Image (cartoon, rainbow, N blue to C red; front, side, top):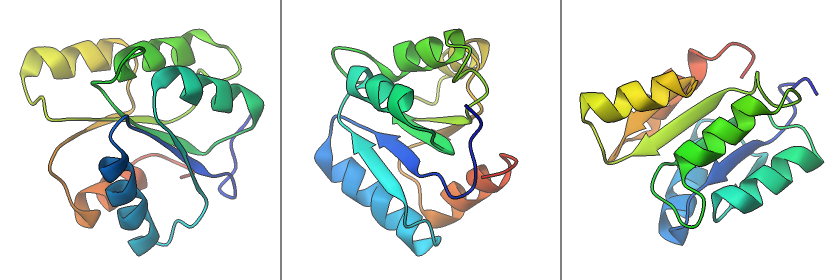
Length: 127
């Protein structure tokens, strides 16, 4: 399932305030087509229902973490090439390495603004 620029961006976070913040930043950047999921399991279900252009996921969620979601996406042949940005308050090198090893496309450390998000999205071809 190839993603197209008209496909929505999926944002995943168990904290509704963070979903609103990221949605607002994406709107500032001109991305109107945005869907939300409040945990990794519901995000995975949405990803399997329709194409998305990009996933922006929080790392620390229950019951399925962002890292577990990333691993499930990379293990699914239909989703494996989907650009995936991980968002977390963790800036430790070991955490970043763990996300890279799992196949993350890019990584954003909280707090962040529209400029950082714009730069990260711009580095992902076709987004």
